[in-house]
Image 1 (cartoon, helix red, strand yellow):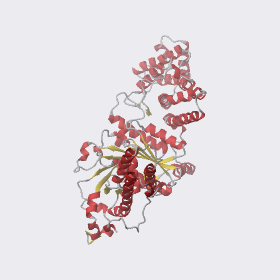
Image 2: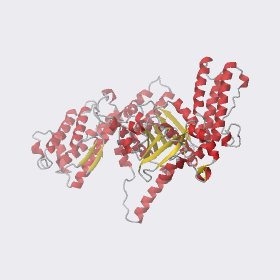
Image 3: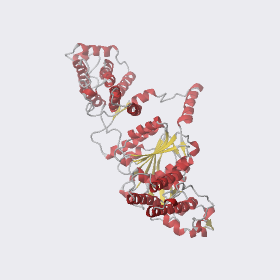
Image 4: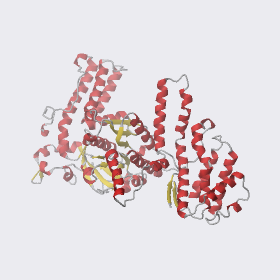
Length: 624
C-alpha cells in the first residue's frame, strides 16, 4: 500500500491566538475533535496488519506522522476554546498509547485484548473503543481503505492550517465592514481581495480536489465505457487543452511546440541569455498563435530579477525591433532632461514629448501585436519573495478581473521561494526542487504551459564540454520535476559563418552557390560577425520525443532577438535600421527641444509604426 500525504507543519498553533479563534476556525478545526476520526485511528491500530510504504514528506513513518498530528491537535485545544477539554485530551492520549503498543509489533494489540492493555479507562474512552469494535475492520482491503482515509484527513488538517489566515479574514470581515469609518469602496475592495485569496487557497486543498475530480481512472470494457472516456477527452481538448507553436525550429520540429499542463525549464550559465530567450519565446509564441487567442486571453510574464523598467526596454526592443542601446538612451536622456528642467509631471511641452515617446514605443512594439486580440500581462516581484503560490493567487486575481492566462513565463526559479517551508532542515537543494514541483502542480491545475529558467553550475561555462543535465545548478531535483529541459549558451567562441554554426543557420537555396556563400552574404560578413552571436540550444529532457537534439540559432546584440537563420535576420534588419534611425532622430529632437525650448518643432503625433518594406532610405545598401 502506498499513500502520499503532506509533511506536517511544525508549530501549527503558533500565530493562532485566542483572539483569532473565531467561528470559522472553530467550525473547521473542531471537526477533527469529533469521535469519527478517533474511531478510525483506533481501528487501524487494532487490526493486525502493517502500514506498508507511506511517503510523508521526508522519511517519517506512518506512526510518526500520526503521532505528530496528535501532538499538534493537542496544542490547539485550548486555543480554540472547545468544551470538554479534558475529554478531548484523553482521546488523544488513548491513540498515543495504542500507537506505542502497536510499535512493539502489529500482532500484540487486537480487538480481543485492547481493554487488557488499558487498565484505566473513563466512560468516553470505553465508548470510543466500543464503537471501533462494533465497526471493526474485517479484511486487509478494508484496513488499507481505512488507513488511506485517516491519513488523508490528517493531510487535510495540515492543508487547512495553511489557509487559516483566509479563514480569519473572512471571519473578521463582518466586524471590519460594520466599522463606520470604513468607506463602501474600501469594504468592497477588501472583500474582493479576501475572495481572491480564499479561492486560491481553497483550490490548493489537494484532499478536496482529489475527491471533487470527476474521475481519476476509467475502465474500458465495452462501447459505453469507451464513449464515457471519449466524452471526457472531447471536453478536455475543446475547453482546456492548448498547444503553442514557438517559432523556433528546434522546438517546433522535435517536440512540435509547447503543450498545456507542462513545465519547460531553460537552463544556462550566468549571463548567457536566459531572460532574453524567455522574452523571445513570449514574443514568437504570441505572434505564431495569434489566431488562437481570444480577447480575454493573456500571456503572463513575471520577472523576479530585473525591475519593470528594464524589462519594458527589453520588450520594446524584441517586440518592436529597435536597437536596445537606443532605448536605454531614451531613458538616460529623459532622465537628464527631466532633472535639467526640474520636471515633476507630464503637463509641460517637454514632459508631453517624453511621455509621447514612451507611448509610441509601446504602441509600435507590444500593442501593435496584441491590438485587442489578447493581452500581455507583465508583473514584477522582488526576488526571494515570490512563490508558485503567489503566482497562483495572481492568476486567480487576473481571472476575477476578466483575464484568462493561457501561457506563463516566470523569470526565474533561482529568485523564487517555495510556497510552504515544509521542513525545518531546509536546503537549497530541496527548496529549488520543491519550487519546480509546485510549478508543475500549478500547470496541471490551470492547464497551461509554464516556462521558467534556472542557472547552470560554473562548469557549464567550459565551451569544450557538451551540455547535459548534470550541469544544472544547485539541485538536480529541478530536472526531476520539469517536463522539458533546454540547455543553452552563447557561443562567443564561434563565428556565425563558420562550421559548425553555418549549416544550422543558412538556407542553401538562398545563400549558397556551388557550395560557397553568395557575394551578397559576403558583403554582409562584417555586420553578421559583429552583431550576431551563435546561440546553442539542446533539448536534454523531454516527456515526449526530441531529447538530445540541438541547434544553433543567432542572438542579435542590437535588438536582442534570437533568429533561426541568417535570412530571418536579413528580413528584420530591413526594419531594424529604419526604425532605429527614426528613434535616434527623435532622441536628438528631444534633446534639442530641451535646450532651445522651441516647442513648435515638436509634433505630438509622431508614430513609430513598422515601416513600409519599400522604404529604402535608411536601409544599408547591402540589405537592398
